[in-house]
Image (cartoon, rainbow, N blue to C red; front, side):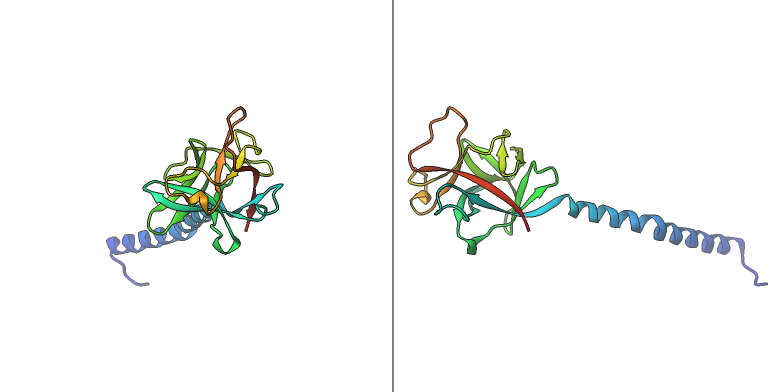
Length: 178
């Protein structure tokens, strides 16, 4: 039998118990937290469905413009922007390499991306705001500050009773998990 000073034996025994605890509890718990964090969002594309065949199949895309706000336009397939939605479908976000995470939001009738998640959405089966899917519009020829709508459609939201400008067409936004 080998002699072991009591302090050394206690130290070795403590290290053994700590290692066993780490392997049995800490690492599995950490892995569970990591997997859960990734499972809380789903990568999606937001694609237009419309009575206007020229709009159907276009994708939502945002132009990073002012600090904290990006306008949402319609784009061809080559410019597909990925969005991540929460598991309860209430928030949609994207990340810009130079500016961090931006969330889908409705601000003064504009569908925009902002740095905070203000608006809550549902998917029934199209993207809905306040439970309604039929108040999204693709608008062109508006007097936007940079004349973007002279070249492409800006995505807008007008509630029931609001005046929809000429040049706007009703769209539905299909949420496709990829």
